[in-house]
Image (cartoon, rainbow, N blue to C red; front, side):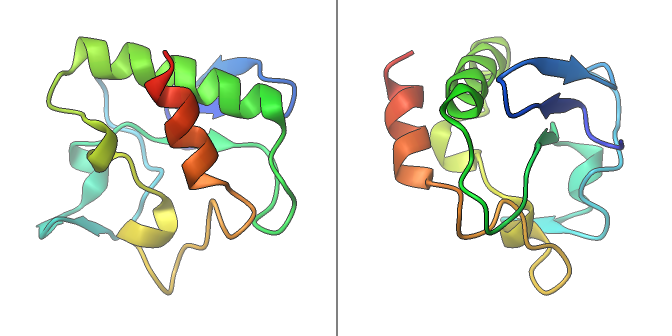
Length: 111
């Protein structure tokens, strides 16, 4: 695993890399015109597949973790949370069409 965190289907969170260290989750990537997202981002993987609905415990855990990250790094705002498919289009597909962004953002707003 090359991400900072993995959120399993049951909502448990596994940390592989310190959040202040570089992980290799994004590969060649770009966000808002800045290349190499691995240099400045926190990678969170969700256990599952692009076309299989994610479990409610995953959304809950992701919202909780994202809230904690946003509190620690205020420059990380809701509009700066994105998927691999957005930062490495054509090469990465996750979280895919099964991920409900509206539901996640609603849960995030509730934390």
